[in-house]
Image (cartoon, helix red, strand yellow):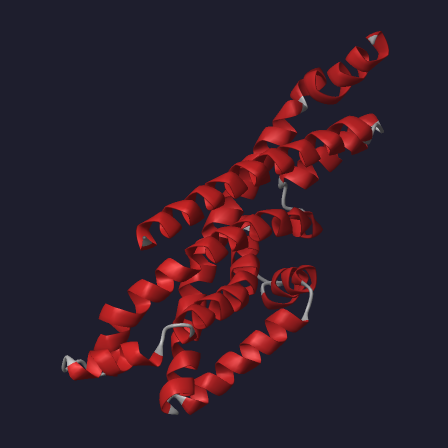
Length: 229
């Protein structure tokens, strides 16, 4: 027990090393929330373009661009995308690592959010579009007032799960030397040569956050189910 106490002190108390974990957690949450916002906005735009093409045949060029984007992003690892954006696209620019991470993870998340939104839109019965037309709405008005409110409600739980996935994906941000939660734990390991405590601490923090957000998503799903009755 005494040895365990000494290891705890060496890993977290000495030189205020616990701050590496705290600062890393802060960066992880900042990147996750901002990347989710970018991903939702981008995914929404892509989903609208693709679903419009599927239903009307319009926006063909934009649909092709969106398909290329989805193919590239979903077909390559997120860590490779992160490295390309940091070392290739912004290699000669002095830019915040947090901003690079937000862009990289936002672009990656957007591809998956787009398919979530698109599946929500396509799941709405065609009769809803016909009902909109019978009310005198054009396609855009039907999408805004009838289709999107229903689709958004249907995909909210899936968006919550995407947030959880994104939270865990940000653990590779250390590849560009961004001090996220995982990198903070690894810095402590490099100082103390003791991998067990800092890495287990990081894993437990991720686990607690995932459990909390999973619980929130479950509560949201129950509330949406209850509102349907």
